[in-house]
Image (tube, rainbow, N blue to C red; front, side):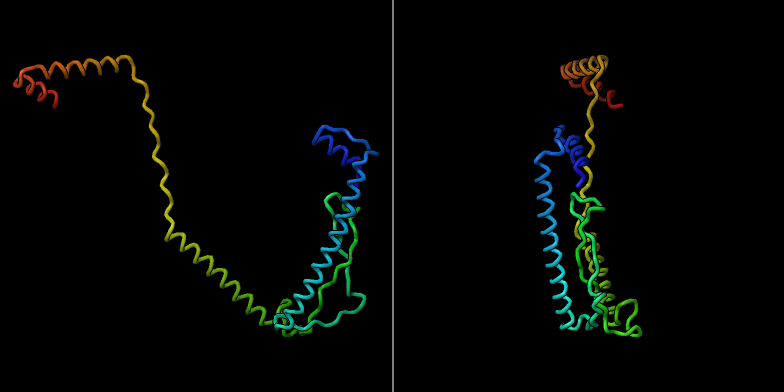
Length: 192
């Protein structure tokens, strides 16, 4: 834990200045220790669960039986870094190495047996067919919503246009007051 880096980070984020001797760093160290212990427990639980899953898969016939690895190759070290650790401060924890299989090199290709290759091929085919089915279903049943019609906003009329409209309304009223023969003649002329 780099206290100077944390000090500058706190100042950058909050504007609060803290000293290297501030009790908050004790809390950070305590948090780091608890987090490291929790991570170690979770790694151990995950390791135990993966061994149990591998045992159940072997019992079901999904994986070939494992050959007991030599004692020296039984564990490897892995680096587990917490959120406040730097790469140099990462804790070293034991993690089980992957078990070797008893299948010979002639029956496996690329680490998989022929049965596993068939299962992988079937899974790939099912996933591709499922994706195609979803795409076809979407194409058939879901039509895209048409875009909304554009909203046309009328421009304000000029003074000349307003005057022409008023004159036209006056003319329409005047035409209605004419005798029917003259009115029909004016309307016929307006139609041309």
